[in-house]
Image: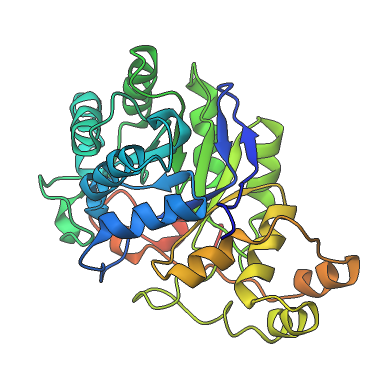
Length: 320
């Protein structure tokens, strides 16, 4: 039986290494036994896991890490890279540390490898859920929140800190006052939304983009088949003997970004890891570059006439 796949890593501006490809743990319809899914992922070779308190997956992931150590699949917690996030309900300077401590308690860990500000807004609610009333959407004190994130880093509770879903403008604003620059900006990125402007800014400041939804979040209510049924990708996959998903993920890897993939199916989890021992040709890359661009997730849930963002355009600062 073949051993687990070895995933390459990048070195973040914090000096810590992060595996290029991680397993996402969010799904509206989750399998009944997430622990066994995550143990299986570790067995296959996944060493980076992306979670959040709103996903409901922190506790199962913590149990899976402990089980993987017990079974000898990994020797210690240090062999896995764990990302969690500060959800909007806790996006207040006074709540950052308690929220982090809650996530660590859920996971049964002493530190996180990466902690991200999930969205650039605050929600006036104590509940962890995906949908809120428009009246609950509030502006975020990003300067205060980021200072609290930096304090969490100083305490040794997180090895790297970063952000998620920040536009080029919002990221530039953060860089203007941060003492510790974000190590990562986790955003939607794929062959159908390639983010050239944001990639340029991140490259300039040594920030890694982590792509979420690299395969179109097919099957979720906001997902689409634009990637998995894309004729260009299907053509390349057929002539290379690869899957469409492998072609889409390989393209991202060649853009020097990191990525979070989400599948709880064993065979697809295995296939998604098999992108590192081959390359796209120049002709194939040119074909992919011609794929029409479209932001898939608009973020309408975070837009309100009475909230901090009146339009989708304001949320993304014109990058739509």
